[in-house]
Length: 390
Ligand SMILES: CC(C)(COP(=O)([O-])OP(=O)([O-])OC[C@H]1O[C@@H](n2cnc3c(N)ncnc32)[C@H](O)[C@@H]1OP(=O)([O-])[O-])[C@@H](O)C(=O)NCCC(=O)NCCSC(=O)C[C@@](C)(O)CC(=O)[O-]
Image (cartoon, rainbow, N blue to C red; front, top):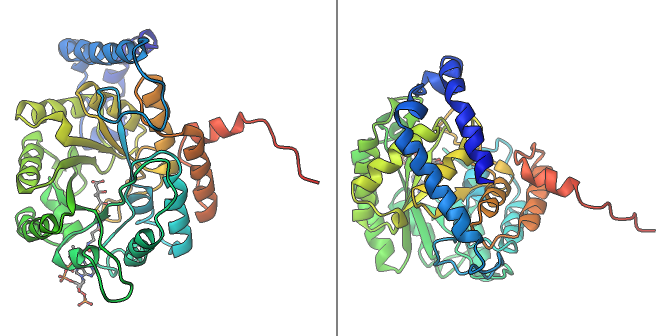
């Protein structure tokens, strides 16, 4: 397994130089032809880490990969399923509330521990998320059946959004969300498009949100968008990502998810970013990877995150999604592909790959979308056909 990947990466070195001018990423974040030659130390460190993990995780001492896997060990990867929020927010046709709830309920049976369920943002900007209050009250009234405890976070941009997450006595009454996420940007251009304000103003708005949420016992996760490059502001300096990430952590976020919103990251740029964050003293336990798969690089970028000690990865079932404010950006790495990859390098996720593949097939059909997972359809196609019932 490891030898195979080393072989593939070895072959990439000459190819990268040749493809730099034609790669879709080259316009916004040029590939460095010298990466695999002059930075061979980084390359071998990366392989050493993945190889160590693989052999460590496959040694006889490790537990079988079941949904009850211990999520505190170094070989456990927590997957944050963002399909019902990031996956659906950009759908032009409003997805019926019943379909959204059914998606969350089906995902809950797969062993996932975190399922982002919606966002309390302005409906005039993101109409698809307008029914998030109904989703929250439904989840609290009728918790989905799940083999393990599941958290259902909601995105919140301001105090008005937080009101919807707090306990409510007015219809629909509910005892409040247990977790929210605030979302900042590392690029001014995207902050203005997405939040209609500068990065500095967004932090002024987040401050009271986090304070109030924590007072109510609601955990807060942070996002940083455009961590590699931005269609409005160009390449993002890693120092800016470090600065924004630190602010979110200092404010009280328990974890910060790094969004390669347009999927332009490559193993080089992601590795440089990871090193900048770690060298700035941010522990890997405080970080998560949120990689979009626009150019098909999300899995290899997740491998770079893994090798840098990250153990939390966001993904979207069937690779659903895209951001309404990032033109051309497609969905997150597909959950099915991420689970398959993680299991193949000996990591544990607690997620039942077959079940999550079924959910991917179901939601793609339900909303009339191509299933963007490679693994899901391949796995389901191998199943023996069930005889037609008489
Ligand atoms: C941030 C705002 C609200 C500012 O929006 P604004 O227009 O500047 O705010 P405003 O305070 O002037 O309010 C305008 C209207 O929105 C209402 N409003 C205001 N706030 C809320 C709220 N919370 N909930 C419901 N309604 C709200 C408010 O009441 C008012 O209503 P009106 O008087 O016109 O009828 C707006 O720009 C917005 O909602 N933007 C949507 C951002 C969004 O959802 N983006 C997608 C998610 S981020 C993402 O996908 C990236 C991520 C996280 O996945 C990571 C990655 O991949 O990089």
